[in-house]
Image 1 (tube, rainbow, N blue to C red):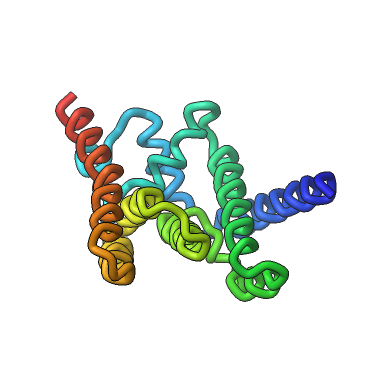
Image 2: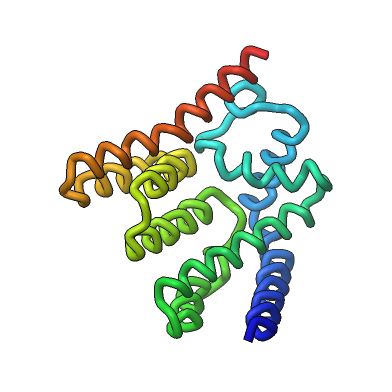
Length: 197
């Protein structure tokens, strides 16, 4: 059974990798996101060394692999791994309907899995649904909400507010809010340190 699961995820990884390699290079957003992650790897900072209209969480995460080997191929491998995690998360939510649901999401030209901050927002949103469905701790949900805000503040902010009101429990809402501030405050501190360095 485990062998079948391992083979399944290896084949899925190959599928995502090939799709991203074949179709992703024609998308300028993919190249831009790699360029920003490469700039971070080279020591440049958003808002100081180059302009950015988004919060930089996705690019920060994607720059990690580039410290091991700095190439577009590494960037695509990282994205394929994230696609596997997204597939796994959705599978936990919808069960046997995963192929149907994921096929709809991929239609028509695979842009759903392309490497950009919108992908991270979708990934975190589905992970948040998984946490809510399985009644996971409010502290973990709060951290994911904070990461969602850092991924795309216009979407993350709305989801955060909705999540706080949806619990209908002041203590739980406060805990979520408190833990959502942790990644945001850490990011501000890191920016402050490096911008003044």
